[in-house]
Image (cartoon, rainbow, N blue to C red; front, side):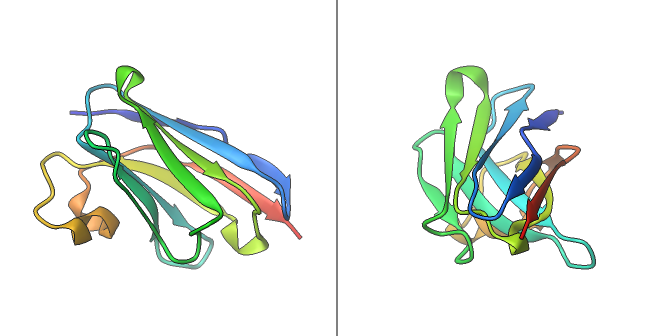
Length: 125
């Protein structure tokens, strides 16, 4: 069982930046960020393979968000720049319980077994 704890959410003006952190209680093969806005379904944001450092992003955040990991601290970061009103959501950190069989699994929430409690990001326009 892996426990995930997110931090770093808050209120920011459009165009501003925030940095989210997520620390796992154990070593994670990969970690991902997902978000859910009010009245919308959960969607993929970004993911990282903690062993080799490869990353993937949703098209909506490419060029604005950057995911990185610190294996020594079992921590993943999400640097969010040029924030938009539409980025407002609860952001969740997630980790799989087993190795992904396909690169497509990184963006599929159903392939993640462990989830954090979420941290709120509010972008004012």
